[in-house]
Amino acid sequence: MARSEKQKLKLLILKDYLLKNSDENHPVTVPQIIEELARYDIRAERKSIYDDMDALRLYGLDIIQSKGKYFVGQRSFQLPELKLLVDSVQSSKFITKRKTRSLIKKIEELASVYDEQLLERQVYVRNRVKSMNESVYYNVDKISDAINRDRKTRFRYFELMVNGQRHLRKDGGWYQVSPFALMWDDENYYMLAWDGEAGIIKHYRVDKMLEITAMEEKREGKTAFSRIDMSSYNQKVFGMFTGEERQVKMRFRNHLAGAVFDRFGPETMLIPDGEEHFTFTVKLAVSPQFHAWLFGFGTEAEILTPEDVREEAGRAAREIAEMYAAAEPLQS
Image (cartoon, rainbow, N blue to C red):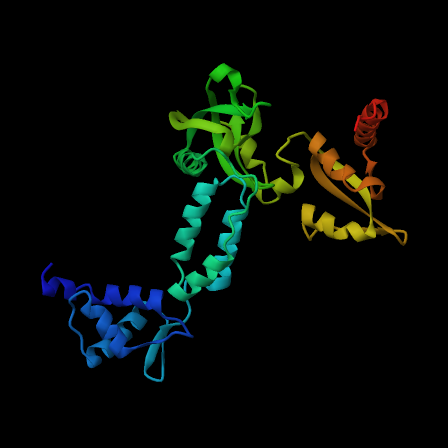
C-alpha cells in the first residue's frame, strides 16, 4: 500500500490504538502515538497529533488530555458492564462451552488491554451443565430471520433418552410452526410459536431443535399472539409449561415476600393477613410446574381460591405423599 493511502488510515489507526491501549490509569504520550503510527509507515508530527485528537473528539470519541498525555474516558461499554455480559454468557446453560469461550473472547476485545486482563482473571467457564447442541447460536439467528420476514419455520425436534442419546420426536418428521418470539427462561432459550395444526401456542427448546429453516409460507396465529403481554408472560408460565390461565389467590408467610416479588414482579400487591401472613392474587398458567414451585415452600404457602385449583394442588400433593409412603426402604 502506498504511503499516501496509509496516511488516509491515520485516524482509524489512532482510534483503535487509543481504545485498546489507553485508560485513566494508562494514558499514552504523543511520542508513543507517533511510534505506533510509524509501525504502519505513517509519518506524524506533534502538531498533527493535536489536530487528530480534536478530529476524534468531534467524531464523538471521549478523549481526555491530562499532563500532556491522552486516554479514552467514557466508552460504549465500561468494565462492570462487560463483566455482566461475561457472567451472563458463562452462566447460560443453552450456550455450549465452546461457544461460551468464543463469545467471552469477543466481549474481552471490547475492553482496553488492561481491562481485558482483569476480565480474563475473573472468567471461569464453570464445570456445569451446558448445551450439547452447538447449532443453538445459529438457530437463534434463523428463528429471528423467520420472524422478521413473517415466515413459518420447520425443524426436527429431539429429546434425550436414558442412555444420553438423542431421540427424534414424530419419528424424525418435521415440525412446521409460526414463530413469534424468543424467550430466555430458567437458563434455557425457548421459541414461542403458533401450532396451526393444534390451534394453540407452544414452546420449543431452541437447543433441542435441529435442521431449522425458514419456509416460504407466511405465519399464522397473529391474533392469538396479539393478546399476549410478552413483558409479563414468563411470570405467568412456569418452566415454559402451559396450562389454563386462572386468577389464583394465595397466602404466604411474610418472609416469602421476596420470592413472590422475584416471581411475579415488584408491582404485585401484597395484602397483610394477620401478623405472619399476606395474601396476593395473580393470573398464571396452572400446571405441574406451578405446583412444583408452590410445593417448594412447603406449608408456608397455600392456594386459597379458586376451589378447583386448590383441590388440584391437594391431589398432586397427596399423590406424591402416597408414592413415598408406599415405597420400600432402600437397602444400604
